[in-house]
Amino acid sequence: MFVYQARTSGSAAVLLNAASRAAGQLPSDWQVKVNHDRPEISVCRDGEGGEPCLHLNSVKASFALERGVDVSPGDTPYLTWSWKVTRLPNGGDFRRASTDDQAAQVLVAFVDRRVITYLWDSTAPKGAMQNSSAIPLLRIYAVACQSGTAQANRWIAENHNVAADYHRAYGKTAPHVKGLRLQINSQHTGTVAESYFGEVAFRSAPR
Image (cartoon, rainbow, N blue to C red; front, side, top):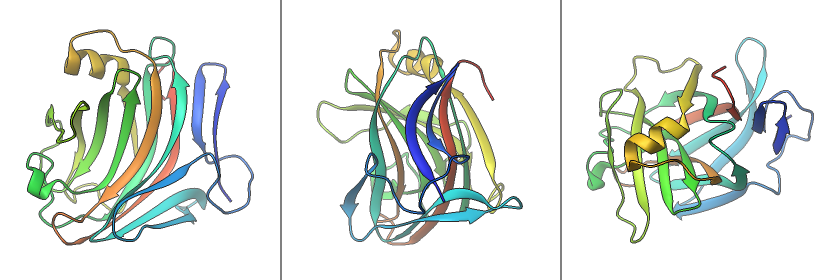
């Protein structure tokens, strides 16, 4: 039982709503994007309260769920979400293209073809940040929110000021957000990764 929607409620734009009712299936407004091999995505329940969540499992694969949005970072600058990693891609490290695999990442795409991506990395230390893009005409700035197994197998709540991160990365005011992607990768290291996502929202203040 999970619903994905982009709705504005007061000072929050909820994109992934764990509290709503819906059939236990992926919705039409989120699209599966496959970069390599076979995607394994399912709707699940996890935790003490049996909260709805997304389950992603990657076997030497790279895929994501994404959708278009229209969010003003000036009004709702905080991106909040919950996630859990149960299996990290062995040897994954976003700082090198040959090992750029993560068990979980949240990518925020802006209208100017710039991206901020928030990672749970296997090796890079928590707080590591750098430009990370091999795609022409697309600029990606990566932030390691979690690292390694220290917080594995437990739900972690994240709060990040997207407007501030954009300014730090690109030196100017953040334009509108046009898309969001939840992704998993393990094709570069040829390993296995597994993660879960709970509610995702843009808010005017940290949750």
